[in-house]
Amino acid sequence: MPIRAPQDLLTEELKDIYSAEKQLSRALPKLSKAVQTDSLREMLDRRRDEGQQIIESLDQIFEQIEQRPGRKRNAIAEGLIEETNNLLEEIDDPQLRDAAMIGAMQKLEHYCIAAWGTAAAFAKALDHPEAAQTLADLIEQGRQMDDDLTRLAEDEINPAMLQSDDEDDDEDDSDEEMDDEDEPQARRAAPRSGQ
Image (cartoon, rainbow, N blue to C red; front, side):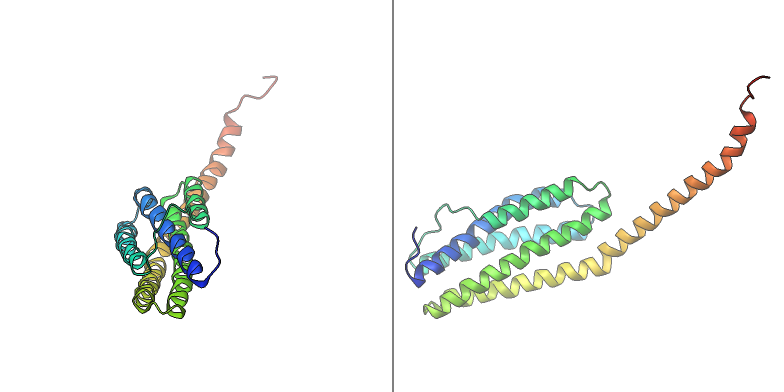
């Protein structure tokens, strides 16, 4: 659809948001299975549920402005989700993976907050007060999710990640000490050539 008027900008922004939420709703069950921490899994499940409510709210906004969501594909959301999946595939350590998941989810949430803010500004300017209010509510909901993710990272996920890293370092140091202790015995036990 060519963009020729301010209303077209609002419609395109809403289509982007709609596509992003649909993609995120489809991706979250898999992402939720990839985490180890129950509290993070619960937060991802909460975001999935909120995403369904967001999609319903967007359906109502499309009705209010007499537009349809169409089948537009949001390339930014698609890229962020793909980046998240690729990152998680590269991480074996569960605590490290959980910390990476929070960072990835916050990137997605920040994108959504920015998109909702843009759409809210357009809706307000175009005198769609109900749409503007719904989008403002979504911004607050997104900020709350972001704050909750930050708190979870600071209080639980990051300390667990660092503790896991310290334990791995201790195991590596212990393995090196054992190798050093075994080395002289191995030399004494080895037969000398010429005997």
